[in-house]
Image 1 (tube, rainbow, N blue to C red):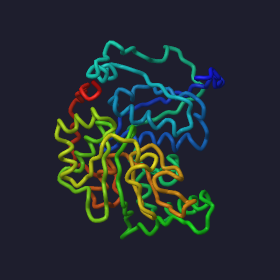
Image 2: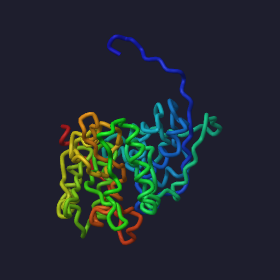
Image 3: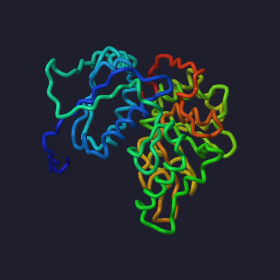
Image 4: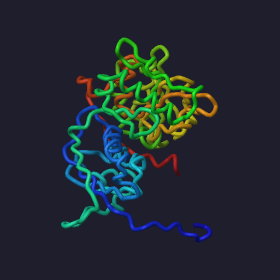
Length: 333
């Protein structure tokens, strides 16, 4: 841009992501995002296109929830993404002093798209993306029912990817009594560090421990104002009482600069990516660790279950009550 040397692209196609229904309790934005990525990435269906989120299902999602889905659209290989806006959007902008900036965005009464992906939010289940790409996704229920087969296949795929005989990923050794043991949980950054996600994770952890034995749980709020609001409402204290380590706003865990898992460890993370050479996997240096992507809610459920992989939807006694977010401009002033 400084040299005025433009980067020119062809006019992109537009694919409608038509949302219906509403997410079930325990299903978070990462679950929705991973389900979409699994469906479209390998086919290249939205590659270099604009994803346009429309449909009645949007009304069932808070703005935080929409942001949590949207921050993952890059992993579909799309060029960009855009959403319909409504009163919920305006309500979100109000605490930031930006309510007058709201403009309603919606498709015209008759709009033509280059494709459509229909997503029934009510049928989405808690997801997990195994190494080493967000599209390598399964429902947690599906994985737990076929642990050895799916993990062995993942090991073989990773072996082909890294291309070294002296370095191998051992996931099947994490199976204990028919369950998958997770060594570490991380809720962080632009994907996981959102106010709603951390608040609901804390609701799941309440009365349980997130730091049992060798299992470690870390939480990184997505911004200093989010951290301040979580302190004001007491949620930070609840997380710490549950054994979680709360860190400052920092997106490092996404690229391996924070809570880097040890060689051979299995880490579940509400972050954006689990590519090779991220998250502690450096095959060229002889180190390989396994990073899976999961929603904050299922990470908390896994922590509450002693570190064994657990879908948040399995917990039926959790009350999800997230108070309105109050934005404090003071830290930026």
